[in-house]
Amino acid sequence: MQDPLSLTFAALADPTRRAMLAQLSKGEANVSDLAKPFLKEMSLPAVTKHLKVLEKAGLITKSKEAQWRPCKLNGDGLKDVADWMEQYRVFWEESLDRLDAYLKTVTVKEKPKGKKHGRKKQIQRN
Image: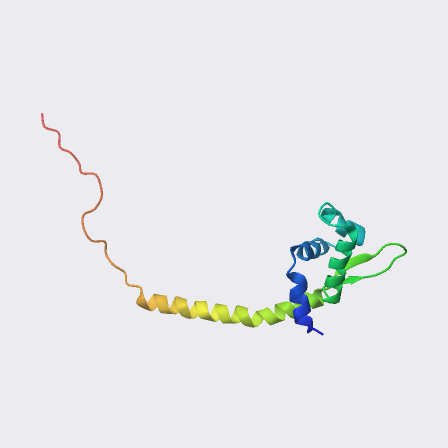
C-alpha cells in the first residue's frame, strides 16, 4: 500500500484530475456536472475512475443523495501536500536571500567610461 502523500501526488499528476479539483474548488458538484467538460474526450466510466483516484487519495469526498452523487473538495488532503512542500519553500527562500546578500557584496558601481552619446551643437557660420 502506498503512503498517503504518494497517493496524493499520483492523483495530482493527471491534468484531468487537477481540472476536476479546480471545478470543485468553486463548490460542490455532482458526478454528472464534473463529467460534462470531459465527455467529448472520455467515457463516463473513465471520468468515474478519475474521481475514484481523487477519492482514494483523500482529495474529494463523495456522498449519496437519492440518485445523485455530490462531490466536494477535501482540504485535508491538500494540506498534507502543502505541509510537505513548506520545507522546500523555506529552503528556496533562504537560498535566494543568501544569494541576494552575496550579490550585494560583489556588485561594484562603475562610472560609465568614454564619451557621452549626445548630440553636439553645431555652430552656424554666416
